[in-house]
Amino acid sequence: MKTIWFIRHAESLSNAGFPTDTPHAIGLSEKGLVQAAALALQWPTEPDLIVVSRYSRTAYTAAPLCLRYPQVPVIELPLHELTFLAPGRYVGTTEDLRREPARQYWERCETDFCDGDGAETFRNFCERIDATLQALRERAEQRIAVVCHAYVIKAILWRQMHPEAEFTAEYMRDFFAFHLNCVVPNVRVYPFECAGGEEMKMLSPFQFAVG
Image 1 (cartoon, one colour):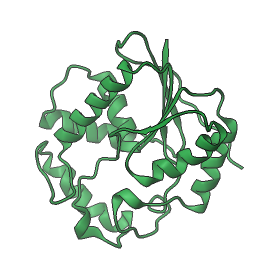
Image 2 (tube, one colour):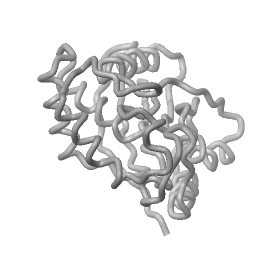
Image 3 (cartoon, rainbow, N blue to C red):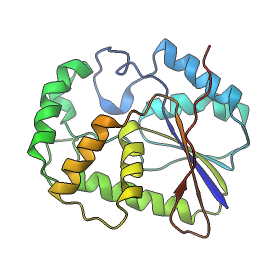
Image 4 (cartoon, one colour):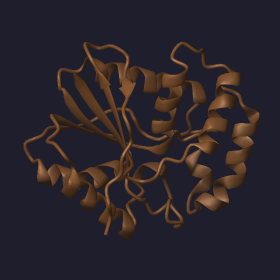
């Protein structure tokens, strides 16, 4: 039985309210560094593989775990966050300053709308997550720790509830409603099991004590 742990990255500078320049190069806050260390210290079993996204906050979160298990290979898979706003227009902004354009994006509810250079459509995001989940199910490793992002984990949870649904405007609208009501704290762990490349079954989420 394969176990895949999806872990939201530790608190980032953006999560903590600091202005940031680009989505892929956001560091961790001081609290986030403590969370990452606690995650590694309390991790219950050696993984066969550690996965990060191309967004640096996942690598920073995984770094203490990699130090604890230096023999475990680390790979990057396309499980990076949904970037639905064109980054070039929001250099030096905070999450609060991006809140209104984000609201407008979700109100459009157009699965193929792209906000500009560096942004991604909702459909492409969903297809990317589906394809990467299938690749993870097919890998030979049996214990895989995946450090990823809140939207990614929510997309996985929503897909579990609607495995055959098409990526329509209704799917997008319902996903956003789910997003608003689904809290995914930093370093919360969402374990799944699957066998022989079959669909994943979610186990109980958990979180380690910090401090």
